[in-house]
Length: 162
Image (tube, rainbow, N blue to C red; front, side, top):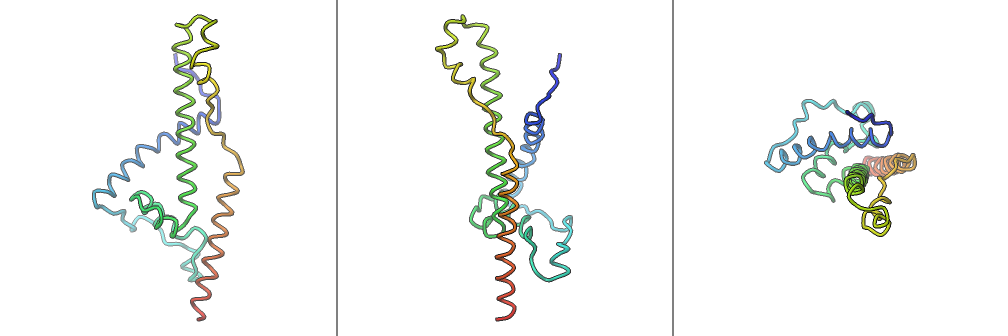
């Protein structure tokens, strides 16, 4: 009755799709004027030990700013979060389009004679594929965090000595 899901991409898509209701609830929660309590979040160990911001510092503030719709403030806190949000949206949208188009093709393929299938809009839909996960996306994110962290470190160092 149920099909087994073999593709890694499809399993990842379903897991990320499960996060979507929680994101929507967080957006609604923040737009109602509520805030996320920082009591549940541990302090940054790197900042506690050295007094400097780590490359990941500002991620929580960036997520909250992005959920509120303040994109520029989110970029100022940490640009890696906006990059992750864009990748998440592109992955979810592309896989949703691919799955919907495959379902439309499967439902309508039975109704259309084979000679009309090649000229139909459904033939175009069969070429829609979801965005593939590639290591380059992770490398870009790592470089973005490192470059931003190094630049912020030198700014903090400059501010301490001048």
